[in-house]
Image (cartoon, rainbow, N blue to C red; front, side):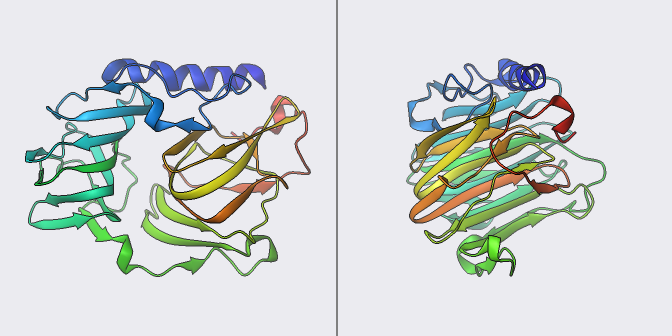
Length: 279
């Protein structure tokens, strides 16, 4: 188990070397980034987007994928960046941007597939965005830009199961071909989280609220708090959740996966053999 996780985090950190510097590190007990306070990360530059400040979150040099939080200064204008064969995904945290002819305020979302990455982008008063560059998946069904305001979407319950009470979502993107999915997750204080693991890499950024979370590592829970600007990049098979995981007030997470996901409950924070990891 340790070797698998060590390889995953080394890949995530090395991935930043192509575009970015540094790696978003979590507590020393964990071999992958969790409980990251993005505000504490150093500012870096992103090739193809001059004049911005960025916080590098994750990346992969073999695919040129990167996850970032970027700050656009007042009167900034250029394009959405990226390069041929790469898609861009962004979410406005603060301020307002213009994407082509459309204005996106806080809560605005855009997915721009390969071939459309030269769209103009500008801001008058400055803005803060989540900004993701990904290798285009040939099985993707969504091949045209998707631009919308999450403020116009309704919260929908995750399911009617008792285990999902207090959890609701706003779907921003769900590609039936690649399985890639981006969504906002609202967690109410009444929500109870079981120990579980996912079949794919998942990353999350806390947009608002305060959240206490637990990661299971080597049979022991590692529990810490997230405040707005908190981030995790969790590899497949990582066990998390448990009775200590809860939201103080209402928390809203921005979440992403790039493949079809399967989530399984596990009995608890156990020292699992390598074969129990989901591949």
